[in-house]
Image 1 (cartoon, one colour):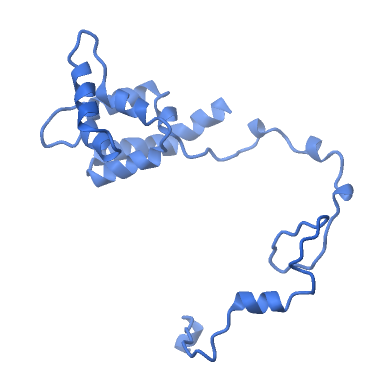
Image 2 (cartoon, one colour; image 1 turned 180 degrees about the horizontal axis):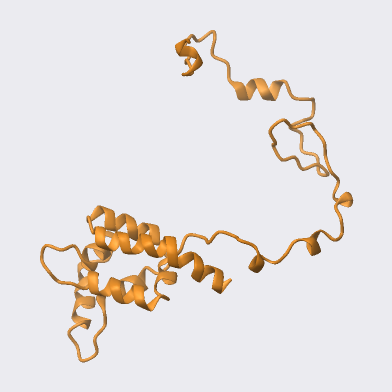
Length: 184
């Protein structure tokens, strides 16, 4: 058994270098790259150059396929706004990230990393001490509600908040798909 059969060998000889894309294009039929208005080609492996005209597609095509509600479409990646619709999760996140212990990375670190200025951080922190309690974590998440939850999990990894990371991962794997299915 030779090494070549298991691992590809790169030939660096300038005479031997051949661009497979150039070879493929030059070996194509004449007019292949010309823009034909009536022809739309999709690259397919083992293309046999067969084309099915749209007139041969059954008029019952739309009737044969069921609506997305009945199919098992996978849920798209959740955004923070989706996460905020889950009251239990939001409550737990607030408990974990509102903490003000000096050695624990909290909402301030996350917000600062996403670009909040010192003045904005101070303003959010002052709101928590007024007559009506506002969670700084909730305010921070509201401000960045269009970011994907995966970016929030990346911050958890960066700041080594494994407890929050596990909470978010469990929600994305278990709760989010079922919530998305119910909503759509």
